Length: 348
Image (cartoon, rainbow, N blue to C red; front, top):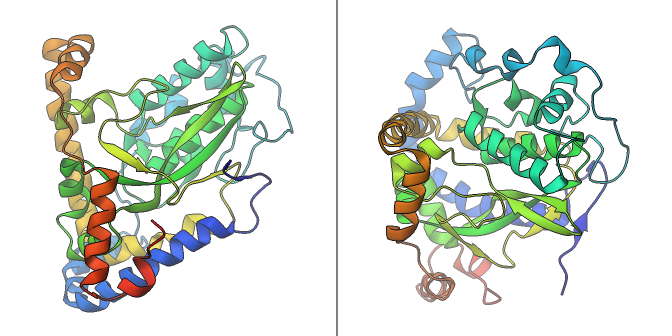
């Protein structure tokens, strides 16, 4: 059965997205209460932000040097691609495809000159190479363009916005996933609240996604989340446009929703979670910076093409199969752990 695609400006949160969020909220709140002592570990991070007059969940690094407006020249703003007010081409919440700098970068990347396929690939590669994965409050396409990067959803927003600005229809897709062991250790391992919530659910639900661009009569997926430097630093494959990332497997039917626009209020849903685990978030961001530096040295030494060739030959992801995920969830349910009856359902 075909998956529903939610179109429109997204004033209301679609039920599938709200349902997925609520399914995680119960276990998360339980483990926050269970590990309430960890909240105190965030105090130094809170104090730093308060001293800078920033919100407890704010990202406090100076990102002005990464503002991509610096690469644009006066002529780049002339004869911009035309705006279109059609589904999947119009600007939507967190996807400011009508912003002059977004239209200018689309023009610079070949909109109107290259084929849709070549332009989409150029847009994907630009976002993947120029913007970095950073865990911080959602900012949307324009904010990501003007900073070092953002979450996976921010990078998707930027790719979708550039695509739309260049005349190629684009949309979002969120889905459930099981990460590679390295990603689990990096993102979830350091914090018991995040780790135990994930272990209870058995997978990450609707917290990651991809952009889908309409090219030559079909939707082609692109996930520019991991820069080549981060991939190289972790020994992961560099993902080309249209390829499935090697660091995770998709759990079909879980958190799976395609939509044109993020709903109102969506960007604020995760702010509370960031505040609860801010110390761990800062640590993860610092670790990813270190990994990018390591990866940059690797790529400088052997070159990206040679890295891709060697990695594809030898890379073996440590990812459980979907059946193993289901078995894990069933075992959790049989053990009658907290929330098992409501969260770990049989309709996996």
